[in-house]
Structure formats: C-alpha cells, structure tokens
Amino acid sequence: MTEPIIIVCALLLIAYLFDLWADRIKVPSVVLLLLLGWLTRQAVAWLGMRTPDLDALLELFGTVGLILIVLEGALELELDESKVKLVVKTFLAALLPMLALAFGFAGVMSAVGDVSFPFTLVNVVPLCVISSAIAIPTAAALSRADREFVIYESSFSDILGVLFFNFVLLNETVTFQSVGVFCSQLLVMVAISLAANVGLAFLLNKIEHHTKFVPIILMVILIYAISKIWHLPALLFILLFGLFLGNFDQLKHFRGLRMLHPERLEGEILRFKELTIEATFLVRSLFFILFGYLIETDELLDAETLPWAAAVVAGIFLLRALVMKALGMRLGPVLWLAPRGLITILLFLSIPAARRVPLVNRSLIIQVIILTALGMMAGLMVTGGAKKTPPQGDAGPARQPPCDGNSALTKTAA
Image 1 (cartoon, rainbow, N blue to C red):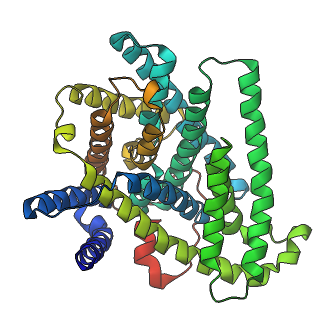
Image 2: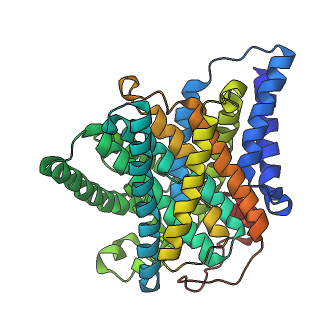
Image 3: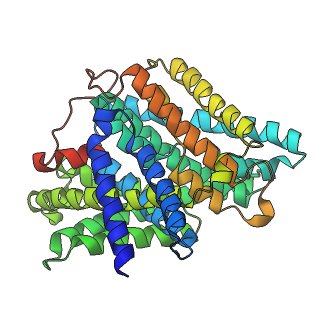
C-alpha cells in the first residue's frame, strides 16, 4: 500500500501547485489535472504497474464533488434585492441554451442515426449542461461581477440539467400528469430544503463536540442521496442550503431564526466555509485526475466522433453568444466559460444501456469535454480573462473574503 499512497499524495500536491499557478500560466487547472491523470496512466503502463479497476470510483468522487462544488459556490454568493436582476438573467442564460441545444442536437442526431427522438434527447442532454465543477474554479480569476454570474449560471445549469434529464428519462411523452408530478417534486424539495436548512443550522450551533462540521457535511450528502432515490431535484437543496448559510447575516432579523443565536452561528459558518473549501479542492482534484487517468487514447482520437464533437462545441459557443447578446450582455471572458465536465459524465453514466444511442458514446463525451476545456482556455487567453477587470453588470458591492490567510486556496477552489 505504500506506493499508491506516495503516488496519490504526490499527485494532490502537484494539483495544489496547479491551482496556485493557474492564474500565472493562463491555463485552467482542470486542463492540467486531466493531463496529469493521462500522463500518470502512461507512466503506470510504461512501468508495468498493476492497478485495480477504478471506474466505480469515478461516479463516487463525481457525486461528492458536485455536491461540494455547488455548496462552496453558493456559500460565497450574496443574496439581496440588488441580485434579483442577476438571478433572472443567469437563470435564463442557463435554461435557454440548454433547451435549444438539446432539441437541436436531438433532432439532427435522430435524423442521421435513424433513432427515435425521445431516446436521442436523453442522450444529448448531458452535452447541454455547463459543468460548475470546471466553471466555478476557473471564474475565480475574473472580476467580481463576472464571477457571480458564472457561479449562479453554472449552478442553475447543473440543477436545471438534472431536472431536465430526469424528466425526459422518466417520461418519453409529455402529459399533464407528468408535468404535474414534476411540479409537485419541486415543491416537495423546497419544503424539505427549508426544514433541513433550519435543522442543520440548529445542529451547527448546538453541537459542542470538537468534531462537528464533518457530520454536517455527511448529513448534507445523505439528504442529497435520499432525494436522488426519490427522483427529487436534490441539487436544489444544496444550492438553498449554501445560500441560507452564506447569507445568514441578512436573515437573522427574522424572529423564527433568533433561537439559533445568529451572533454565535456566524463564527461557525465561517469555519464551515473554510472546511468546505478544503474538502472541495481535495475531491475535485481527485475526480479530474482520475477522469484523466481513465481516458483511453483511442477514445480521445476517435476520428468518427471527432467531427460530431467539433460541431457540438461550435454550436455551444455560437448559441451562447446569441443568448448573451439577447440578454444585453457583453461578450467578454464569460462567453468561453461553458465547459462540459463532471455533470456531463454523471448524467451520461446514468443512462440505461437500453436507452443509449450509438452516436453518443464515450468518445464523443470525452472529446466534447476536452474541446470545451481547450476552448475555454484559448478564449480566456485571448480576452485577458485572467486579469481582474472592474466589475460590470448587476453585481453589488463585493464582500471581502472571510479569511485572508486562505485567499490563495479560496481563489482557486471557489
């Protein structure tokens, strides 16, 4: 067991250096992590080392990483009346391209591949969702306004993408009954979120044991997993929980929340944020290194799917530019932050074998993820996205980071 421990520790330390240097070398850390994982596989093969089957770990790290990334991003968001316009704009920016891309890709691929439209639609939805696991850390180098836009947009995209995917997976035809069930699930999840938020905040305040934050995170993951079993929009709970804790200072005037002793809870929330940042960095790094390790070179260079992948990526950025223009936004570095990644993999792995279509395979998924990451990298280099620009748009005054000592890690893992 000594060699695997040395390898994993060395890889995570290299990942930490990537996070520190990402702004200076103008390359998103996720691109470097994927490359690191792929190079590790080549080295392992060259040395003749035997490794166990790691495919099962990918979904595990992906699910935990998605929860922590959305939670960490939500904890950093300031929610007040000045953010209403931003929330509406980011919601539309996440929803409209997703629907247009999904129905457009499904229509073309079902015609070319001679496959039923509902089957194709299930398969293409993973390609239409922005990965917050990549977008949020990359946006750390942008201005405050752009960073807030990316966090809201990518979080909405993850949540809406999961909702859309589950709906088309469970309902081949749209009926009043299916829509009614969908709306009822949303209401149930909101009610669960409100109750769980207060309950978890109460435990955060009352637990006196020296180990208190790990149990809270474990309960958050548990609620998420149980909600997934019931086909409820579990990511909505994660987003609301993060917003609740991150904006608790603005909610403390509500009489019902005074029993939580807001003056004491604020310090605990600060410590919880710091632990979440650390845990997010660890799980996110492990996931992308593992994903890079599991990439087959033949799948990456598959000539049959490469034209389709290029067409999909071109459609993603073209439609994104049109929607941003329609919403009155400037085409700056935010245009290029539409990566596919963790959520794409998780949704693709959730498609039953009987519902998969030949055109949407592992090669296409891998190529789209790599091409969007490279497009993001090139776009940020061209637009100078790594430079801090004066805030533009609807964002209000920026809140200062909670702890200057962790500013480097906060910038890269947020």
